[in-house]
Image 1: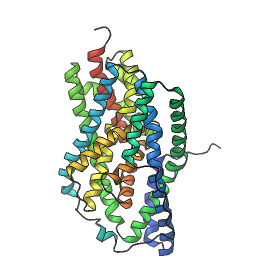
Image 2: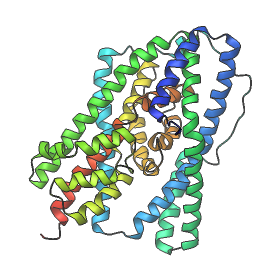
Image 3: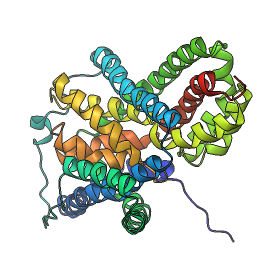
Length: 387
């Protein structure tokens, strides 16, 4: 019989349910054992994130720059602008709607510390460098490879990136459901699981609604520029959205996204250039999902986030998201370090963000690829060859 494969989304749901149930009845020693795994895995995440940025962002910059041209720079500029605008859009909307149905400080440190569980073992795994250092190094080396044309250096970082991808796909991602399981179990033992699950549904629904609204705005702008009906164009992209939603990947949905983009009358050469490129640099849906989750966690835990700090996070996250393609949960993995280094989140807060992000992973990639079609409409307007 064929081995039945369970997707990450289903595994996360199972982890949440089992963790919530076990947390209600688990004895304290068992919770402390699970807490030990949770702490060790959090240290492993801190160690791997700078390496992920170095190994994936560096070759991505080198590959993009190799064929640099006017159209490529415009596509990257529009994609980055759309990504950071989605983060600010999520901030404005979430900050105004969360007070309507979430309770500020409901998961404050005082509430969580009412009953604490200490791990049996704490092992510090210091990262090679911090997140911003890794980003700066990635840009310096990536641009250096473009300018010098150093093939050996490029091959070395391509190989290093392959190792990092393998580590993420074979170690980090398979262990994420266990990480979430241990975190939910501890919250169940602390007596705050009802707050987490009750608020989680509202937060996820908020994220889904905001991505749909953002797509409508994107296509209204693209339709106005291209002179086409935005709602008809958006409707033609629905199969691409559903494909990315079901497989939770922007890159894997490229064939369907390209097919849908052609239905909107976009020329083949524009589709073949824009859609694969945007799948690498355009992460508006994943950014909204991450922003909504992080703002909600900050609100629930009573952690004020100044707008200047959040703006810094969005600008850096838009760059770090370049590391996401081809890695399941890549945007989340590339941004975990930024949550702590820029936003000042604790490991518990970061774990909550990860749980909310992964609980319904598909709507982020679905928004990403559908938004790629809007960018293709704009590029087709100005660069179509028969014009």
